[in-house]
Structure formats: C-alpha cells, structure tokens
Image (cartoon, rainbow, N blue to C red):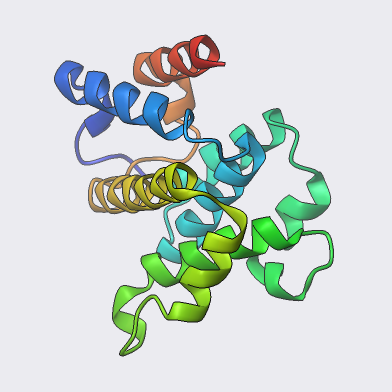
Length: 166
C-alpha cells in the first residue's frame, strides 16, 4: 500500500498548528497514559492503521502496560482499567461515534467523565478526541501507511515538542 499524498501533518503550517494543539492538550491535567489510551481507542474505532500503529507505540513508550494495549478494544470488561480511564474511554467512544445513537453523548457518560476530570481536563480530553478523529479521517482518506509516519520529520518534530512540554 502506498499513500495518496504526503502525510498532511508534514505541511509546515499544519505541523505548527498540530504542535500547538498537542502542547495545549497535554497541559490540561489528563494523565499521559490516559491520553494515549484515548488516542489508540479512537483510532481503533475509526480503522486508522497508521494511527493505531503510532498510538500503540506511543502508549507503550508512555508506560501503558502490554495487557492494557492488548485488551483496549474490550476496556469496559477489563479490571485493568481504572474508573477515570473508563470514563475517558466512554467519552472517547461517544464522541467518536456521534451518529450511532440519538443522544450521542448521554448525560451518564458526560457526568462520569466530569466526576473524574475538572473543566480544564475535560476540555483537553474533548480536544484530544476531536483532534484524533480529524487525523484518523485524514490518514484513512490519504491512505497513510502504518509505520511510515513515525519515521517522518513531522513525527520527530511532534516528539520533540512533546518532550519539551513535559
């Protein structure tokens, strides 16, 4: 498989904007491992092979256990995930699957997330979920190849900006 165009994140102005969003999301108080799980779960739902590849690698580097990575698709049945992670994952699924139900983000899902995360953290979660969904759609539409993005200059720039934010 080959991509249709160069990764959209490699465009300088887009890459700069992505770095700024990335920095803001990671300053909202949500644990890094939770953000990695959210990224990977949304990418699984959307069938984005490039993002699931990059997301699993990034999650492992952030310290997410192999057991969690292997069972993420059934997080709701697995005691490895704590209540705050479950709330973030439920919110991720609801926001990612907006068209799947009449009330896309039910009060129960929102209220559970709000029980674990304050307003800045909820904002970070929502922006993270929305951004992941954007990249999933761009990568699927342009047929980005799994494993290729992590080798790119754009990936190196994002990794460097992420390291500087911590």
